[in-house]
Amino acid sequence: MDDSEKQAHLAFIAQHVKVGRARLSDAEILLLVEVIKKWPEKLADTMRSGTNNGSGWGSDGKYDTATQWVYRFAKDVGVRIERTYIIDGANHGTETEDLKTARKLVDFFWKRRQLLR
Image (cartoon, rainbow, N blue to C red; front, side):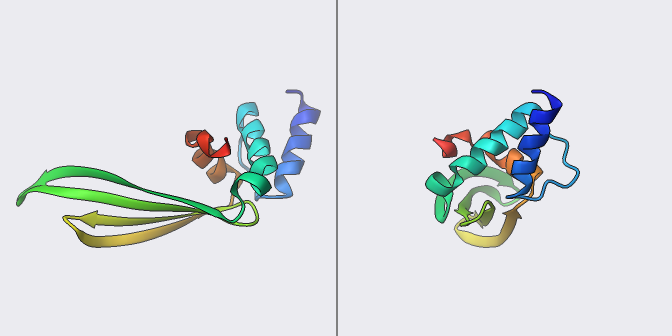
């Protein structure tokens, strides 16, 4: 991708998310352009959820773990991730993370391209 095309894509991205001083490769820029273009029909005002299960060993023996997660896609480009941690059936905390910058969105969608299909 030549510099003028890259600058045009970055200007388009900057209309929707904060780019700041993010260093983005050509592939990452193209991914963000795809995300932004598909946002209204594929992701806006939707959510996805799931659970990851596992187990571990501690001084008290074996324990079961679960992480419940919810991805909430805003009307405008942005993702809120809500995680709840459960150990042996008891809640051990929650955390929330908002993804609104170019870098955070690239890192999120790079691993989850299936959400764009």
